[in-house]
Amino acid sequence: MITPPAGPTLLGFNVIAVGTVLAGLAALAMMLAVYAAVTVRDPMAKRVKALNARREELKTGLVTATAKKRQSLVRKTETTDRMKDTLQGMKVLQDSQLKQAQQKLAQAGFRNKEWAVAVIFSRMVMPVVLGLLVVIMVYWINYFPQWGSFKRFAAFALAVIAGYKSADVYLANLISKRTNAIRKGLPDALDLLVICAEAGLTVDAAFNRVAKELGRAYPELGDEFALTSIELSFLTERRMAFENLAYRVKLDAVKGVVTTMIQTERYGTPLASALRVLSAEFRNERMMRAEEKAARLPAIMTVPLILFILPVLFIVILGPASCSIADAFAKHPGDPH
Image (cartoon, rainbow, N blue to C red; front, side, top):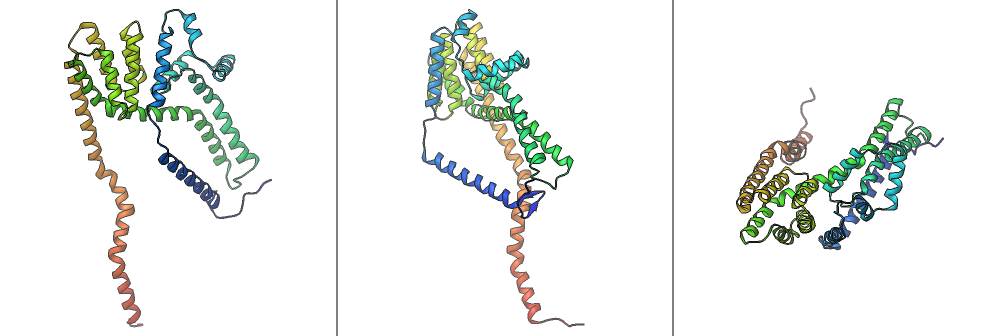
């Protein structure tokens, strides 16, 4: 039986061990920050490579109607194939889950749909791995001997739940960040689309131009617009390109833009006027979100004000007076009665 190292504990955890781990994480974060500061990379290099790969796929006929040709041209990896065979052998791979994972990957910015199998596979493997790790630490090694049966079972259940939800939480975080970045640049992109439409450019040329202009300021939005421009040039139905844009972006504003573009393509309505109305609406929405955040600031700042600012003010203001009173009592002690 291995006994835990001696030392002060807090809530059953070794304070020295936890401090060591936190210090190591802080040092690692500092190294990563220095590395990110000294290495400057082009944010568009990887996106341009992915867009060129998509263009080549469309040129080679990936969007043809025959299923055999589609299946032969889709890029696959041995790792995902093995995962897929394992899941199919266990009868746990469902088409609905696969499509949902593929859409989440597309919304997070991952173009390879084969990784959806890895997401589903992680839901089955990670709970087992983390659960076994907790069982070894808590029950076999008995690293926390002071824990009762309830705490041990709670740690095991928490590890299993965390393992099952880890991939979904990671994808949800990436989707949220990407969606917020696209939301910030959408009004500017619509203004440029209006200018391009009034200048006489076609829809695919306008999307390509906007992607080039906004690629540096809003890389995620430029990536989506560039991919839409490529699909508009190669897909047999232009409607599919707009629907793919709404499929890849989890944002109601983009769905509204897609609906407007489809209606203008179908009925021949003026594109510039419709986009101008949408741009004004999105700008008003962005201003309302900013005002809402500003209105929440007093309530949010109340807790830091009480916990950190007011005690310091009390010490600075009342500290000298308290010292003076203490010195006065020390020099002139009162009546012992």
